[in-house]
Length: 448
Image 1 (cartoon, rainbow, N blue to C red):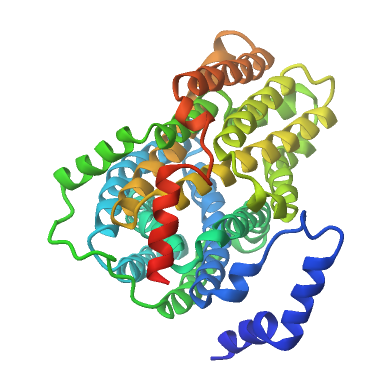
Image 2 (cartoon, one colour):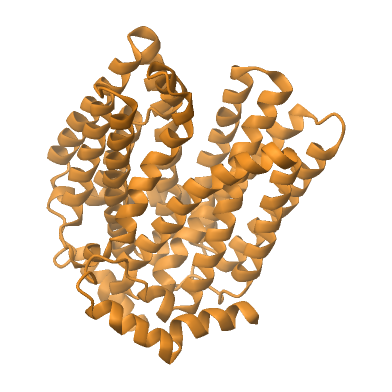
């Protein structure tokens, strides 16, 4: 009751409305982030608050699990195996979770998986507190947490177009990016401090509490049954039907291809420790990880202009190419400061591409397949980064560190250009004239 009242007073009271009017008439209004969805949608406020809390906690565990595995084994291979253990359930359960999201109440799916995560984190916490933590149990829980995320994420992503007005989706997407970038900066830093002063047990405990608090906000969501009644069951044929729809939409397919290319060729995060050594700057390792998130956060805080743009596909393509170009420049940077600058610009470009990819998805995909499309989206941002780390590490070992960055970035630019030529529907996409966007706009008007 208290939290709800706080949101309502801040965003919906006369004082809040006055602040919003001032913001809209200020000279920088067209640049500053649009908070309208927080003001107009109670469900979006609950989703935003829940997601902010949960993501901060999850990023703490993101640091704690590899740290604990490294502490128990002292093996690079053992730490790397955590990512491999998580990949398969993310793919399989992500696709199945998308099918569930199109056939069941999305609110119920989100709540059930949230409770499952609470149980799993409780086991991680208890395992960390015993005198001899079990390594095998950490891998099992990492596998199950990835499965839980795969089941939950499609429903969470498919909910947003149902709770936000069609013309406010750009603002809602930018707000979600703020949540992501703040969590990416603050979460790992907080995780490192918590582990240093309280141990991994405390880190898991903090994440556990974050999920409990998050569940409170998710519980307040309204029921989100499928708009159209369906007798279909989530299964292989249902998933294949969703894939068939994705293949029929060349504009949509283009967004997936561009994102995969950008991640496979220009996601060299595994090389950051070696980059710090290359410039004799071990103090900069944390800054290297945070630099892209800082650049992305700056863009999202000045993202008011995105809702006015119509050529979403061109922004996706150009921004992805700029991401690759900035990564290539890291390979020829004269010092660590220029590396950080290029990574910040890379993060800014990446988030622009992400905002407009999200707009294409949210403004054009029918609700009855939205969950399955969200499951397919998970493939691009789970498989892509993993393959990117494998590519960058392999090229660095065969050639040199700098060549891995430079060649990967240039291949990204080339690959994105080829993808744009092969998928002209993406390059020519216009939210005002696209038939799928027009249809969804009409459907949303009827529902409202």
